[in-house]
Image (cartoon, rainbow, N blue to C red; front, side):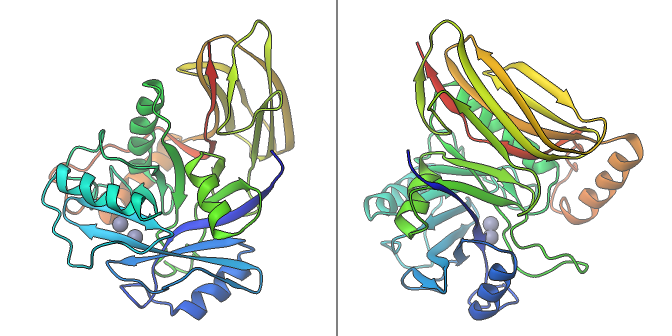
Length: 331
Ligand SMILES: [Zn+2]
Ligand SMILES: [Zn+2]
């Protein structure tokens, strides 16, 4: 497939809901971050009626359905209903999501295991195209999102992972936009091509533009494609900007078929691997938290992320730094 990698952010708020920036300020910041596309997803409100191009930046219309049952991003077409949405249970959520998809939207389960505003209805059977595995600055809730997603992949469900900064404003001087960034491989950066790439799982999620990228291929196949299993089916993985102590892992289903921990900074790391099992292949870069860092992260998570929880969730030992969607392997 001919195409290019385009850097973007699937999830951001403006002053139309509770964001601190007006649309033009958000657009200027996205350009400063070298993004190719952004999706505006205000809570229960349309900031942008139609997608448009702003001097090379694709601005895609969207809305974040925000109800107690959980948050869902709807990208592309207008939502058939108007807020306030009446979504008391799983069935009502499935209904509205189906209607959005019929209207031409791409639909994403947002931060499903967020300690504060995750889903309060079962999500396994909701008709989503995508799931936001990585929401905002990296933290342990995202590891729980990742576990759910991997479990879906193991069952053969083609649900695409995305990242969303959920940008509202900068925090303690940190530019939180594009943190994380979703890098999509698409035919162009038109709204249609970007949304198709997101749905088809042709993306890599990474910490920020200019940090690590993972290029994973099996023969001609790339992320989102399906290849036939054959003896000596060979794949390639190229990783950029691997920081000391960070570990690249390649998975064939649950099995780690390759891993490498960088001892020093590696500008580029190349590897070839053999695929043995039908299912999927995907790659991930992890950072291991040593005891003092884990304590610090745990402190921040308890203070900022878990005030609504009776028991604050446990801090993860490892956080991911970048990961790919899978290439599917069929028998
Ligand atoms: Zn949300
Ligand atoms: Zn949001």
